[in-house]
Image (cartoon, rainbow, N blue to C red):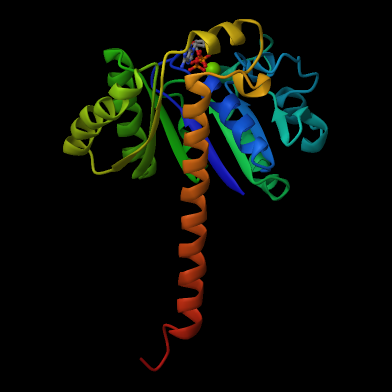
Amino acid sequence: MKLISITSGKGGVGKTTVTCNLAMSLAAAGHRVLIFDGDIGMANVDIFFGVRAKMTIKDLLDGEPIQECITKLVKNIDLLAGGSGLYDLMSLSAFERREIVQQIQSIHLNYDYVLIDTAPGLHDYVLHLNSVADECVLVITQDPSSLADAYALLKTLNSKYKMREFKIICNLVEASQGAALFSRFSEVVEKFLTLRLSFLGAISEDLVLKKAQQMQRLIMKQGIESQAQQQIQEISAKLVDIEAARQNDQAYSGLAGIFFPASGHA
Ligand SMILES: Nc1ncnc2c1ncn2[C@@H]1O[C@H](COP(=O)(O)OP(=O)(O)OP(=O)(O)O)[C@@H](O)[C@H]1O
Ligand SMILES: [Mg+2]
């Protein structure tokens, strides 16, 4: 299981869009995916899939077993919904926040990927969710305030949780501009902060995607041909490759431990 957070400094940059379509792409490749809608109180992943979740994180906090709180969205994709209206991120106690994070970590055996769609910004709970993820994916756009807020989020995660590696998706950019935006951003970040950014890919502003979403449809679900669909597929394939490489590395270091034990004769 891989726990992947999708986050941003500024709101409205496309986290939920990326999370849902990435989930569809991973599921189509046969992976079992759980989406956790971490934007508690403003949750909308279920709406993007055109359903309304009956059970939410609120039920989990009220003592329901986590299995009961999960909504099946489509084949290979389940959702732990964040709910909306009655309560919000700000009103969660530290105990409740910890409880949610522990429950997410405990459910991992049933899934290949858990994708966490976070709320934007520097809220403690958002930082905590990002800190427990195996991969933290930061969504940025060309908007200067998105870049400034992304920088602030990286700086906080780095200083508070010692996080050093982040994956970047540039959304709402022309395909040819994505790599350049990443370079500009990473140059500034790596100049002032001790951390490493890697480029996961760019997603173009896509009117087909926007229109589909307004009708509560996902381009990946409908199989609608669009540039964004292609780009998201490439991003998901890259994530799977990164994961495979990491597992190989772990297997290799495990083997190295057998052949060259620390207390060995070398
Ligand atoms: N690549 C894209 N092309 C066209 N429209 C997009 C694209 N990405 C996102 N959008 C649109 O931008 C809006 C915001 O996207 P989304 O809800 O995914 O952002 P968010 O980061 O999750 O927002 P919030 O911080 O409020 O949770 C939506 O209307 C979505 O359809
Ligand atoms: Mg969102």
